[in-house]
Image (cartoon, helix red, strand yellow):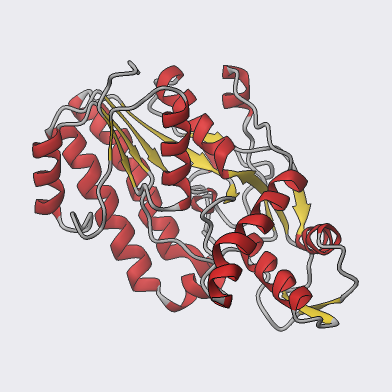
Length: 314
């Protein structure tokens, strides 16, 4: 990408989109365009096409999505499949119509089967059943991956898709019910610490294994792929470091220097038993993550204190 290229970062207010904007800005890409939800509803085809017709971006990062943890995925199943299907369809089609030079679609590791062989390679997509709790979201993301693949095949477009592992970091969602596991745990432990509670309850039995990637590392990876990857197959982006939920809870507690008891509520769902991506392809291209899990969690705890807790106290 040329430094003067017109780059559209869709979803710029979210955790991923804001990290991509931050990375691009810090590296001299100053011709960035962004659309607020009040300006254009990405679920509405005509609004999206009007936006592309007006701004005519050279490159597009498709980072907008309706996301959430186990609770949100279970409660808002229709919204998760509809919103994400429409966003993917409208953006990818507009990238084709308005001759975008290159576009990157961000999927999610939940697109892979619940009991896929670990670590999960890109080839395991659609080989067996999905995790039931997040199936609507996963199906919408799979549709986006296939849109990319088939627009390339039919129209010779230059679109790519990537599969990030579990993400966290600045501007994360710490909602007590609708957040993902790591920010949810950060909120639980920080709130318990601030209220001098002696116990924190964690969903499940603590055994599921997860891989996490700090969002600024993902942003760097996305720009790296935009500049170095051209292939019709999706590519994984992960840290190759995994941790159990029990270990994760203990890391957060220790970073807070908190002496509380951790209780695992085994009546609540565990989700997928293990989720680890095989990220050999992107590692072989020359990209690897830089921010350790402990350092990333420290930054996220600071983010929660400064952006959420401080606001709630005022």
